[in-house]
Image (cartoon, rainbow, N blue to C red; front, top):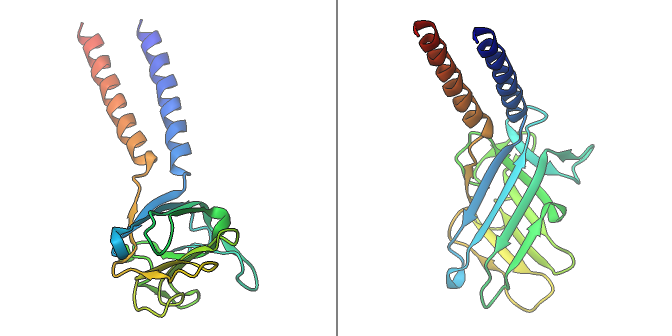
Amino acid sequence: MNMNLKKRARILAGVLAAGIACSSASALSFTFSQGGFAEGATLTGSFSGDDDNGDGYLSHLPFALPSAIEEITSFSLSFSGNSLVGAFTLGLSELEGLSFKLGGDALIGNDFDPVLGPEGLAVFDGATGSYFFAGEVFTSLSGAQGEVGNFYSLSMDVSSSGASAVEQVPDAGSSAALLGGAMLGLLAIGRRCSRSG
């Protein structure tokens, strides 16, 4: 029986170690939202990626010279719509530029990188003309305010008095590590009990 318990403990430890290793390699994930648009319209979205070049920014600059920077692996943005600009949802294929400082002020558009320039976000869908810009480099507004609109209609664009606030999604690896620690603790308790009994 003692040999069977040891075998189970080794198998469980291997499975947990593999799970923790896989989850620690996962991308950083963030959600963002912005209010303050006319008629109570809101903007929400998410992005994931890895800081592959180690510069402290998650960046997606597919048109950068001399070479593209594409650290974002998934992206979505949705605008709820109002009477000036209709509702729309855009994805990674419409992302033209994103620069977000890791560990910054949790707003898109307020930080400045000496190499990349101002932090910001630019999304444009050529098929529908829908767009969203945030950050000083993309708008004439200051700070992290944003602008949404439609290039192909007579409707005016809509600026927000708010900012694109960003929150990091909890890493699955942290949960796996806590679960693994708890399971190993339970195994140790079970082992002590079997020795006593």
